[in-house]
Length: 82
Image (cartoon, rainbow, N blue to C red; front, side):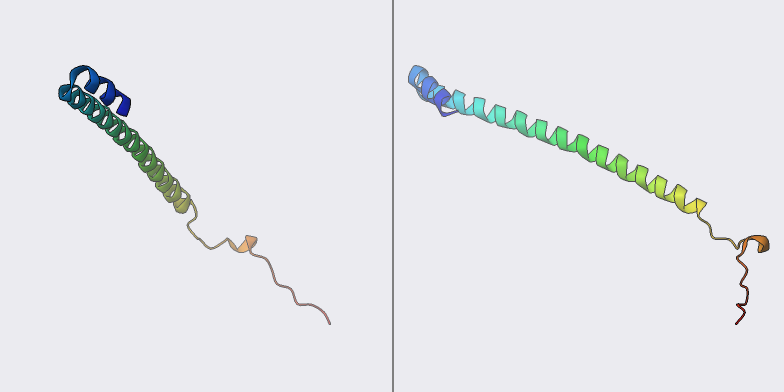
């Protein structure tokens, strides 16, 4: 960006340097806005994925309610003959 200030300064003097500085500041602001938009979009994706994982965890947890097995399904312990 220094070359823009040098060229504008050579052509237009201090006004050219000021225009180049404002041009650089405008580009910096645009880059900042772009970075904030991209980060916000990623944050939305992360939040949505986290909420989806919470729903998945809750759904799987509700399926695993512990109940006693019916009497016919319990393993029978037999005495070993010595």
